[in-house]
Length: 145
Image 1 (cartoon, rainbow, N blue to C red):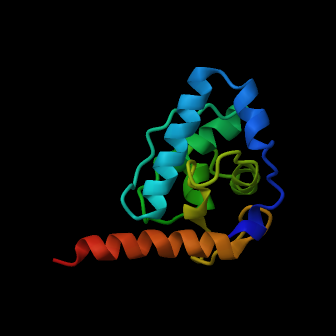
Image 2 (image 1 turned 90 degrees about the vertical axis):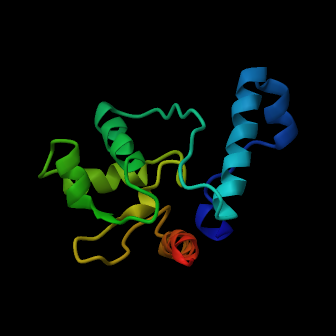
C-alpha cells in the first residue's frame, strides 16, 4: 500500500511531536489506535475528530463520504446527488482526489457508475481495491455464525 501514498510525506516524527500541542498529540494517538483497530478488522466507524480543510463543496462531499456505511459502495453520481449537485459528478471526483484524510474519510467506497474501481490516491486503484476487499472480509467474517 505504501507506494500509492508515497506522495504523502509526513514530517519526521520527533519534529512533529516537538511542535504539536498536547491536544493534537492525543488526537493523533487516537487516530493511530483507530487505524490499528480498523486494519485489524475490529473497527468499522471512526470517532477521532476530523478537521479537514477544503472548499464548502469539498467539505459537503467529504461529509457525504463519511456517511457511507462500512463495506458499502456508492457511485460518484450518488454523492453528487447527496450534496444537492446532481450534475457535479466530475467535481465530486476532484473532491475525492483532494481528500486529505483517506480511510478516515472513506473515498475508497466511491466507485464508477458501472461499479468499476476508478481513481484513488494518485491512481492507486490497488489501494482502493485492497480497502474494499478488507471491509468485505470483515463483514463476511462477522456474518459467519
